[in-house]
Length: 65
Image (tube, rainbow, N blue to C red):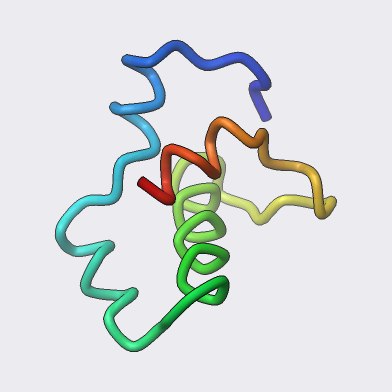
């Protein structure tokens, strides 16, 4: 996965769409954020991260916001 993202790229690729937010409705806390990050990674790359630290912190921060 790409490690450096511009602000525009983060907004374009890592902001949750309305349909994606619907999938998070029954989740809370860390489970909600973890699910959202895994969902976006799978949508963008067609796979799940191989390692615990496979997703850059800036991406997680963007999804959390």
